[in-house]
Image (cartoon, rainbow over all chains, first blue to last red; front, side, top):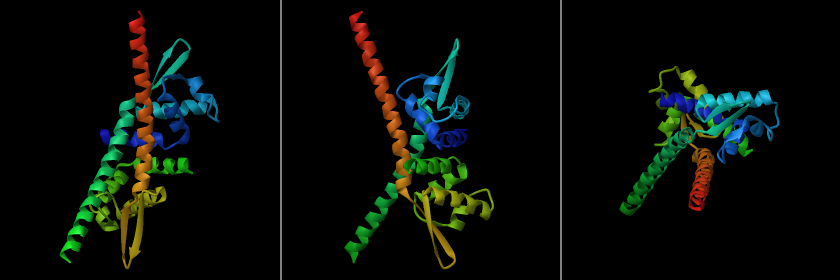
Length: 109
Length: 109
């Protein structure tokens, strides 16, 4: 389940327009037309990107009257961050072990 | 340039087999056959995933004799982590500002 979510989260982040939308939404909710304004594409194209972001769980939206407001869903962003951070820590721990091993070998020599 | 790299990094991470390869490589270099062993797929399928990982810059490989050894390229992992971490911080800062505003409004009331 988590794996499947990570697939969708990372795939959603693999596009500059979708990252621009996330970037806008971390500073607060926005309507679809506010999100579309700075993007160099048609409104339907923006809506397709929003659909990918909603399917990934990174963004949720709610319609009130004629305005659809989008918000960031920070847990999904955190899950992706945690996955990468843990792998970086594993890599650093491995480097430390290698360093300690080399120091020890040097002392013995 | 950075944007284009992030596209490739996030796209490379959007697959469980490729994440499993990254997960193995953070604990040290491995040969292609070592990487393939635990994965439920053919060697050519693993090599296609490795190609995506190499194109993204997350992994590099070197052939010595008949053995191709793969290593993680930690900067790429860090770039993706930094991108997400910055957006999370922006989101938290925005929450803090909202909290401060609500506190102030309450005091005035």
